[in-house]
Image (tube, helix red, strand yellow):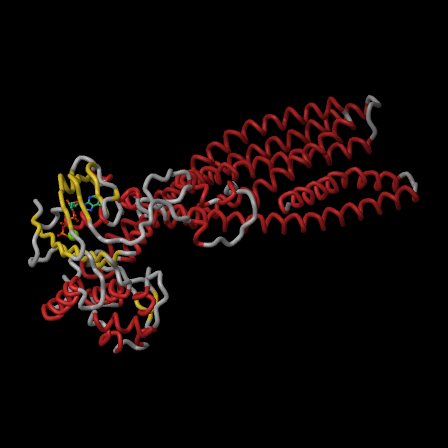
Amino acid sequence: MGDLSSVGFLSIASLAEVAVPHFLTASIFSAQSGQSAIFSKNIKIVVSLCLISGIFSGVRSCCFGIANMILVRRMRETLYSTLIFQDIAFFDAETIGDLTSRLGSDCQQVSRVIGNDFNLIFRNLLQGTGTLIFLFMISWPLALSMLLICAGLAVVMLFYGRFQKMLAKLMQDFTAGANEVSQETLSLIRTVRIYGTEGKEIERYMIWLERLWDLSLRQSVGYGFWSLSYNFFYHITQIVAVLVGGISIICGHMTPEQLTKFVLYAEWLIYSAWWVGDNWSSLMQSMGASEKPHVMLSQGANLHGKPSLEQLLPHGAGVLMGSWRKRQWGEYCPPRGIQMQELVGHIEFVDVSFCYPSRLMVPAVEHVNLSIQPNKILAIVGRSGSGKSTITNLLLGLYEPSNGEILVDGIPLGDLDIRWFRERIGFVGQEPPIFRMDVSSNIRYGCTRETTQEEVERAAEQALAHEFIHSLPNSYSTLVDSALLSGGQKQRIAIARAILRDPTILILDEATSALDAETEHYVKELLLSAGNASMEKKLSLSLLTGCQQYRLQIK
Ligand SMILES: Nc1ncnc2c1ncn2[C@@H]1O[C@H](COP(=O)(O)OP(=O)(O)OP(=O)(O)O)[C@@H](O)[C@H]1O
Ligand SMILES: [Mg+2]
């Protein structure tokens, strides 16, 4: 509806503008011939047309601005939700700098299609057509010659548009490359400082800046060439109009008033053609920039737990259409797969082999057979790189086995509602992530049941985290992130997070590697005793890696 009214305002403003030269010339010539009544009528019409065109242009700009806003928001929302649900293998192949660049500058660039280019192309096409009609009414041979000149300009415009599209795609890729480098360097700034590689990092960034510079140069030269062509065709218009028009006046086929109108309209025509060309090239740039986000949006769902693009765009609406409305979480990710009455926790790996998608030739684990009974603990030991973390990744459903099957209480993992299953797992990894939020929120992270502050603090106490949290400036309300805590503190927060979830299955992947020996011993005892229900928990499985106590040797 909003889009239609914008187009309506645009059409009225354009038609009013097109009629102005006609009445302007008529006013001048009526004044010259002393027809004061006609003169005053014409002046009134000119004033009305200017007012209508001014007001409707303003409303049109506002409407297209709003449409643009909705588009950017919708695109970012859709792209972000698509990214969030991508398979983990996708993130093995893509870099964060590149993805954030797509979300930021690419979406902005694409939104110009509606907010600016589409709007202006339509306006100028409408004005150009109106102008052409006036020209044909004045003199058809002259109008035809103008049309030929515009055709010449259109050919240049097509080539220029293609050139711009190619450059824009490269420009977005290079910008993403520069973002990638800066993002990596800034997030690893401590390492950079320790190794004294600031100069090298600047050089790495400069390579991308050089490439961007080179492209910008080509863009500027291209634009210069486009301006030159426009000027050439513009002056040809004037020369042809005066030459042919002058001869027509001498021969008595045309009046000076008609020629004046014709020159004004001819200028208007070439001006409209120029704008169409300019916006066309800009449209091509936007299309070039949209290629990568478009590919990302159309990536098919292939792992359970990931919604399809139709679910991300409810009611089958296209990315560019429809107005934005806030959606509930369930709309993004409706439940799918089997939800059991109760998860008992019998886990079986049947001849499981797996290669990471980024290294298809090298198996990370081969022919793994495991059977873990409820309320039992399994510890997996093995050399570094032997595949311990890979086994936990497979059990968490982050990747699908290349061969074999994982059964949970006799049901293939792929048939389960993976979100339901993960809600019942407590996981503490080798390098536990800490989000940039307060300590309480970090401990509560991912816990679906309502929890009180007392429960949070009790979990922190059990994970031996309470003492250090208490010494933070704002205790549990202190804002933390990965860089602001020690490795052991991060692990203790992650352990508290796992305890708070009250999981049926606990997976510890070297979860205590950063703790001091005494704390490690205490925490391991605590977590292992949970298997005997001494913490009033009902852990049916603890899968520990790197633990010497209960062994399953791999490789
Ligand atoms: N995302 C990934 N993409 C490609 N290969 C990977 C990926 N993660 C791990 N690998 C490879 O898979 C193999 C098993 O790695 P894994 O992390 O499971 O070992 P690990 O036993 O946990 O080692 P560590 O004791 O050092 O933690 C290694 O050769 C590793 O290089
Ligand atoms: Mg590991």
